[in-house]
Image 1 (cartoon, helix red, strand yellow):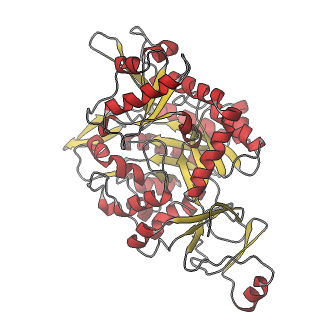
Image 2 (spheres, rainbow, N blue to C red):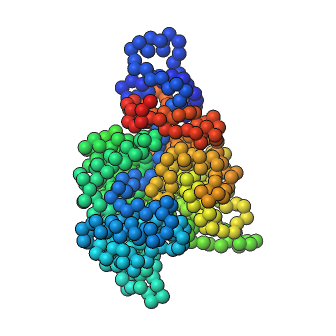
Image 3 (cartoon, one colour):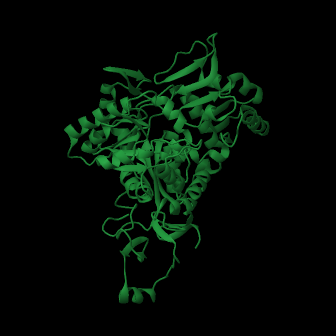
Length: 525
């Protein structure tokens, strides 16, 4: 993945870093007498995978949650049975937290109601996180703890679903889910060994087994920041983490002042980085902010933005003043426009600063936005795996269009000069396995058998670059990892074959081993 040496057959590692690449002849023979030689026997060596949009601190808690993923679960009855079993084994009043549910993937095609959750868990507050993390489903006890009644107003950037009588149904959209989200996480951390450090270490090992040696945690709350700091001080982080800070709760705007900026910038050793903030420009429910043509001279506005163009510009400029990189969640093309307007103001006023400006997702983007992103030096962090899992849903969100609205644009962005990274967004509905996400970027097929803009497909070499060199650059790690080049960390992955040879080779490729600082961290040759 280093343009100066695209392919090599020897790599020398010394003191945890790459010392030489592409050695041959007498020099190599001399070194072989003094070095530990690892012969790959036809396998391929690549940079360790970097997942720049990964909710690592939430995924680490999954072993303490109820696995409600759909699939493999196929019905609400199965989901409720699992919650019932978890409640039977838990102390009264202890939070029961489920994850991975999505109504589009169960036979009933709906969410669980408050009453159904009450029946399954009569003595415990219950909160089931939607697969997208943009909604949650609460029982009466959880609603009471959150202070949500029929008289509660919808919060900014959120909505409380109600029945015909005005009573909450238990479905909480976007920021309305913040309080039960936070309360259930805090209890999981209180009940976990070492306040969650062991869970974080175990999650790191699961990532390393898939070849992931660095992640960008795309939404770090104060609870997550404390967990990371504790783990770093205990030397318990097995991979590199770049913290992307949100606000006090999941959907709250980031707090940007001198004190918070200093906390965001603070690094805790070589494996824990900071320096970036996250803004949710638009929701997932009921729809991202999409502007779509509906006839000559007519634009239909679907969904809404969480911030006006002026509000997001003020937030982004405040972050730039504090030398913070900015990551903006943009599901629809109107959200992308707002983000690019704010980023243009940063480039006008702070063009001399080395700030990373990122658009996350761009599930639905306008063809004209690629050139503007390239001109502004804005990176795109895409999630091809979400297209594979929910491509039909995103197509519904896009609706009628004239061919200018693209789903998960990647090829056109790269061709326009945009630096595009790939990521999982795990556990928010996407596959964690980088090789699976790369395959989705190449074949552009959905799990249901459909296609998602096949003209936006990339080559296997592009897909690997998106998960290594481009992903590292998006996280500000390009001088540390993402390429096999002298001076960089020896964070490496051994694959069963060269995945860049063809789509068929990418399909066959498997992770054999992962190296961190030149030492085997997962797998074995």
